[in-house]
Image (cartoon, rainbow, N blue to C red):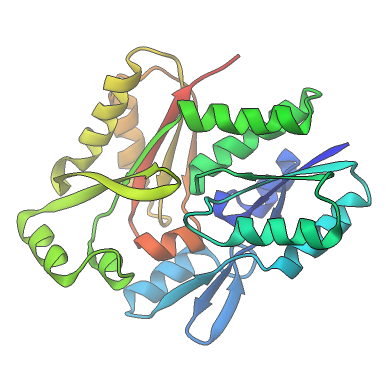
Length: 281
């Protein structure tokens, strides 16, 4: 038997992950003097409320000890583990996974994959790996499924406020000032395992720009899509759904996914994005 393990930055709720047959380990969120396990002990909206109130938030990777415990438990019932994680450019989590496998002397049974992704794109890759395993695939088949998703997926995000990128040290005060003055916002995408600004768009037209980019890239290709939003804002989520419906994209599968505490802590409440890849039979 082959187990599929990922970390909490895939932003699948733990109950959903369990239903899908996916095991998870959690990163940690530091709210003031409290260290809380991502998703398990802290809800995304608690992080966003803390940020809005002016509080500081930091995050920590999954520890090597936590990986050792998870691997020991899974190896009692599974011959091998495929361990798929947040980009090593964004977190030391995948390095800690490698250290744990080394300590256990089980590198031949634990296959660690640096996805180069996070949030909904990571979830998409992990679900594809789970599907490959469920179909009787090997650890190598699962790894190829992750690579296939990464190669074919297009995901972009943008932020309603530059404040949280500035507070997190990703932009300076001058960039925040001029961005707000001009009404411009960065479009963020995964490149080389990092979340980078690929262009800047007017805040008022950001949704149409992101969807237009997907339409230009995929045309009428049948797609699997996800709408990602940082926070439970029913009105805003309904707007994003309507925009997706009106975009002309050929959506055959879709889901709405909350951005979780760890990822959301770095980009702030209200961040949103669209992800798409060709649907496969």
